[in-house]
Each structure stands twice: as structure tokens, then as C-alpha cells.
Image 1 (cartoon, one colour):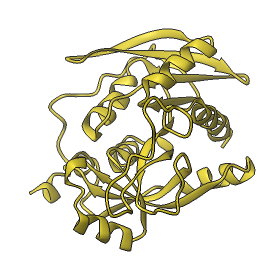
Image 2 (cartoon, one colour; image 1 turned 135 degrees about the vertical axis):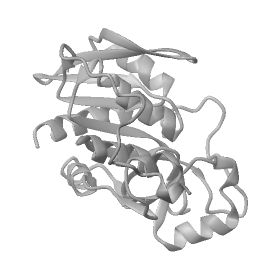
Image 3 (spheres, rainbow, N blue to C red; image 1 turned 180 degrees about the vertical axis):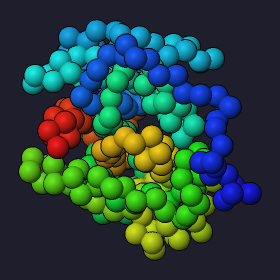
Length: 254
């Protein structure tokens, strides 16, 4: 059973590669948006220091300097296994102990506006990856949620904090499961949060995460809440990278 999958007593068949010459950075910043990736490489003096290879092609890994610190940046992949695998493999290129993870998420509360920043406090583990990094449980705690909330408050960035629902199967977000998760206090639904937290806990990394409020489930019918080509108030909005970069500054100083 998946609930018996966690094994920290025997070695993994495929070992994560670590590079003693990896480029040291204060924080790795990762997100999913190709629009954000284009923005970062266009507006910051990014140096490509390596790339990750998989069947879908190469993923460039960058470093850049900001406010006297060095940061890593990459565009990760949607879905818990691919996202977690990307962080694992990035450690062969970059030497980091802190991660800023951000991206879009669906809203489970109609009062949360499109584009609103959401800070997850716990993640419901409705995916498979986290069960290989942490003992079975319904939820995994997000230890740095308070730090992210404190950062948002200090910067006067409007946000809402609450639990998130991490699921592998977005076409199986049923009405029944939606009602259960909302009743438990979940305000968002996404595909990676629980797994990223579990992996970071297992590897001794600190992760700081936030989401951009997107499509709405808390309505008679699902609604995307965007128009074709919209960037503003979506996960592609460069404002959210600037928030992530400021959060990286904040996390690096902790």
C-alpha cells in the first residue's frame, strides 16, 4: 500500500548525484511559468551554470547576483514527481540549502480574489511522491509558513494563509472531495506542495512557498477567471517573481 511506501532504512537504487564543485547560491528560486522564466533571463544578469536532462528536453539552471547575494533560478515542471525530481537533480549543479517555491493554484474559497497571494500552512497529501519521503499522514506541516507570512506582513503584501490540497489528478477534483478539503480549512489546490515539503524535510532543506490564486472551484461550475492571453493577476505575472526574489532576500538572512 502507498501508506507503507516510506523506507528510510535501506538505500535508494538510484542515488542523487552531488557535485563537490556545484555553484554555491544562497537560495534556489523555482517556478513553473515559461513567461516568468523569460522575464528573469531578460531582466537579470543570469549566467547559465548547467542544465538538467530528461526525455522532455533540457532544463537550464541559472545563477544571478542580487543585493549582494547569489541566487539560483530554474523553471521546474508541473506535477509532484517532476517538480521534486528537478530539485533533487539541481543539487548536482547548485549548492543550496534554501528553496523559494511559487506558482499558481486553484481557489477553494470564492472570497479569495484572482491573483491573491496564498500562503500554505499544511498540505493534504493526495499524491504519491510525498509518501516516499515522509511517513504516511493525511497532512504535512509547512514549517516556514509563519516566516513567509511574516515577510508578507512586513512588506504589506496582501495575502491569505490556510491549508492546501495537493493532488495528482486535477480532473478528479470531485465535488465530494472539494467539500471535504474546504471543510478542513483548505483554501487552495495544486499539484506539488506536499511533495516539495516532504522532499525538503527529508533532504534537510528549508522551503518557503506561496501560491498565486487562480481558477475557482468554489462555484456551481468551475471557472478559469481569466481571459485569453491574460498575464496580470496570474501565475505568469512578473510581480510574483519580484515577491519571490524579495522573499529569497528575506529567507537568506534568516
